[in-house]
Length: 249
Image (cartoon, rainbow, N blue to C red; front, top):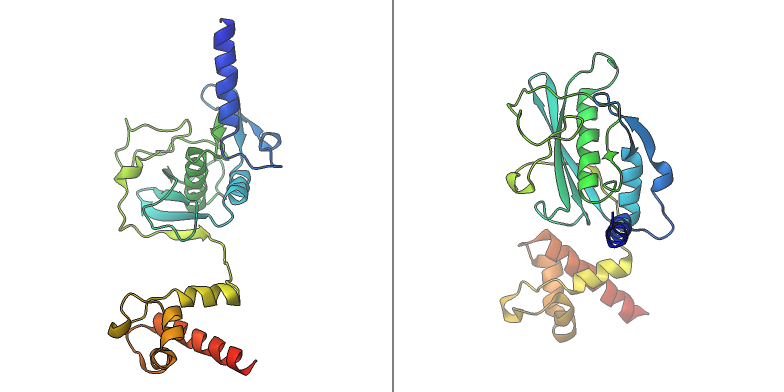
């Protein structure tokens, strides 16, 4: 190999290692040896829990969503990774599907949880959390049964089928397995309320905050008598409470 090729490879490896870089966090020490049961080749993999921790460090408000469907002799799990828990269902970083059945060697392992864990690990790897290693997202290996007629479909070394993200439909229902519970401060809630559009036709195009300055009585009407939206009414009530506090201060 020429010196130029060696330098190019080193540069590419450095770029790959910097994917999803988080200052102060190095995933390499958490990688463990993995022996492929078919080839007996020893590789490195990153445990799913470390992948999830890495993802949380990179995206504190991220979300991992999973759907699990029973099939013949197995469960099929689909995982999606979102950079923010507020992202629409079809705005995800990566997606993966894995199917798992009962393992005779480890009867205590739940095939549902195994499928879910495998799908999450592969989805995180597809999003760049572990692709730096040869294998990621598996606790042990087993070729999934061909209960869905998937033979010939591209699979991972462990038999987990990785789907094309375009194949999923927005109508699918997903169960969130990890979503931060962010509590907004009073100031944040008040600022959000101020930005809510006013439902009164006379003030079309104006926010509740603008109506507070122009016509406080109209805002009071929204807070007390408007029935079109509970969210808008609650926002108006919050603003009215704030205005009353400011007047009495």
